[in-house]
Length: 183
Image (cartoon, rainbow, N blue to C red):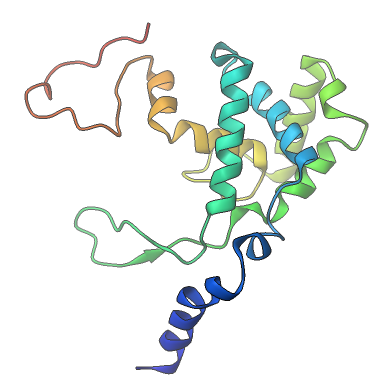
């Protein structure tokens, strides 16, 4: 066995047993204050038709995704692709800083809806944001949250206004049927 793959194997399989997850993820985890601000951001950048309960839930799911992100993990290569791909470093390294900047002028939660939209728009502009990334990339947490949501089956259904259920197998019998409109 070559030295580098052996060391990578040691670090990925044995190190987790000696270093609890909370210690490994500590530098990238979000504080309770950050999570509260993220929920406020979600209420602004996600469709208002979802309602506050769902936008809070999506923000919480995003926090879990960030906590469970494993840089270097192999990802699906896709049909017909022979190369193995790995996840890049965690996009979350600047999330806490970005959320703190939104709170810089006081409490982000205390702002009215228009001021929140303006603050997020300005933060996205300063980050160089021009389109949603194909997957969260760390440029800005607001863009990554939107990307995370719209890549889910629920987000796709909402985006197209149809019950596509892209993550469910519908079988051949219904493959020619158009998806039902969202109600």
